[in-house]
Length: 380
Image (tube, rainbow, N blue to C red; front, side, top):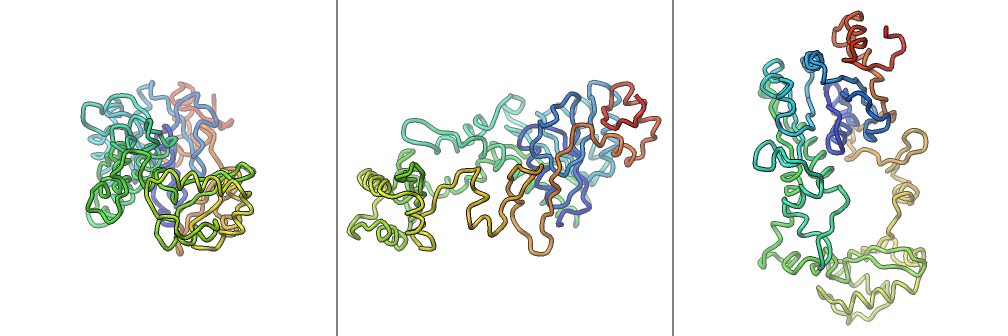
């Protein structure tokens, strides 16, 4: 695996941090997740293959234990607001001095500086001020795309990219560095296409109309979803004229129908046509053609769709939970995910012993409530 041998310390947090750690772990890194006391056993759904240590940072000794954990680490994932780690004297200044090769990845919503840097927020707030949310949805109001844009695309994924870049650079410099990964700038960067195509001189006027009336956001009949006779849906993406011809052919419509943007009459016409057949009937017509028409597959059925099934695009976790396989696929060093989620504190004893702590010392931490462990052999 590409990241085999790298050691990652991940401070438990919400979606973006765990997803970042998941990417690194799936591709071979050893990831220790540091949990808080009384963490719900299933709070982190993206913890597969990680190990868990529970530390109570309300106890002063916890900071010293954590600092020692990071002495031989390659990466630290910090999901807290600016200043939180500094309060414990665990910020980049202290940690990177103790371990000059450490990649200190800070995963926040608004970034490490600026008026909003220490303000609370969630995905919807980050993509709102990034400018991206203003472009999403129909004519009436912006529509947020669950929490995929900020938390996962602009957050965890961009942070993982930054970590890999920093690790690559370290080969030449021998030095670590601090990563300011934040969901405002990450979401904007993922959406660079929006900025570069909002001009009249772009070959295709993709985003010059009001929201909901452009080529890719519902304004065109050839980039839409349509309901079928059996209440299911088909997705149409016949943007290019030669694909549009194949679409009309499959729908048995006259070739004189115009390839026109923002044509409500054409949307209405295609709605009527698609309602005349079931999804299965439309699949028989469009499968393996260049009409760019595919069925909309429900999440719970995606793993059974023939294309996905043949490629083994999904796998089972915890026996019956269907999850996507890691992407992208590397030909020589592919990801080999471990599928077990750790319980909070499951590996506390194991991890501290590995880091050179004495057993009596660990038992003392457990007795004082600084460390929590599920290992029943510990002296309580």
